[in-house]
Image: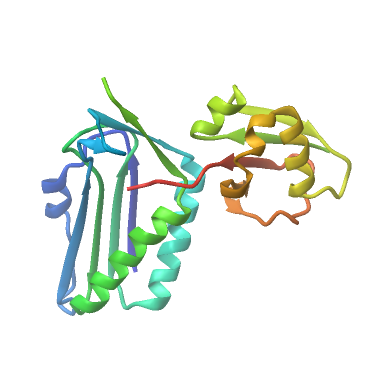
Length: 130
Length: 81
């Protein structure tokens, strides 16, 4: 399984990520998910979210999750980009793409990866209200 | 032995620092370290139930036996995405 992990302070360049997509002719499902910063947090209006990461552990934990994905589903490729630092409202903080032979496993794997990320990958967010 | 303790997210504000060092006797566990940390930073003790604990880049249970030079990280539940 091809895997690509990017933790960056730079904005997520979605068109570039889509241009770089590679899928073999055995693949019938390409899905991706974009997580976007909402304008409210805990019922209060915010202008941005500041993401903090324990970088070394983030990379290690993501690779543990990718290993588990590979064992569970016939995934050809997973690419994940997570922003850190200040991300303004309406901007994407997370981009995940999963390529698999069929949509069922692609959706299931993507959902599972995001759920597990929210359980074990050490990234935290702090609302910015200015 | 000497271990370093790193705080992340709002645990840094509660502790008032990003890291600290603790000196423990050999064969002490993470639970022993937490007792020492809570004596030094009492406000962190209230966070214990939800606290995640890693040694290096892996999560470890409270009965993990520490080694000299271990880097222990304490942090609240994660919130990526």
